[in-house]
Length: 104
Image 1 (cartoon, rainbow, N blue to C red):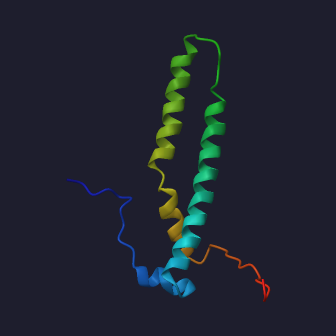
Image 2: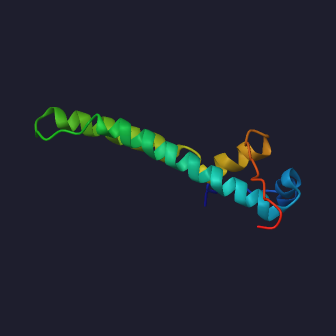
Image 3: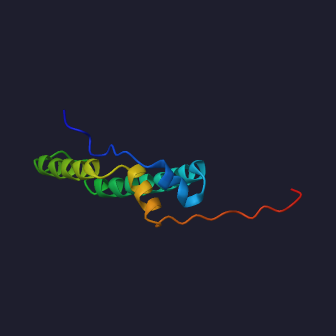
């Protein structure tokens, strides 16, 4: 049985070391994963929208093949969560903290 290449064991100590808190690190990673996922989904929808047609014809078979190839390309890409973890561990993720006023 082949192992799924998207399943990788992660060192939680390395993830926690970036912020000093595992839960904070996971929070940052999850927010970035949502951003990545949203961007990829928008990108895919824009590419597939080019094929939208209200007319049925012989060219549609060729276009469907192109749509399938585009979809397969996105399916083979690493998952948004994996991409976000890699960015986080490589120091490519920016995080900002809101200032909290005393007494509020």
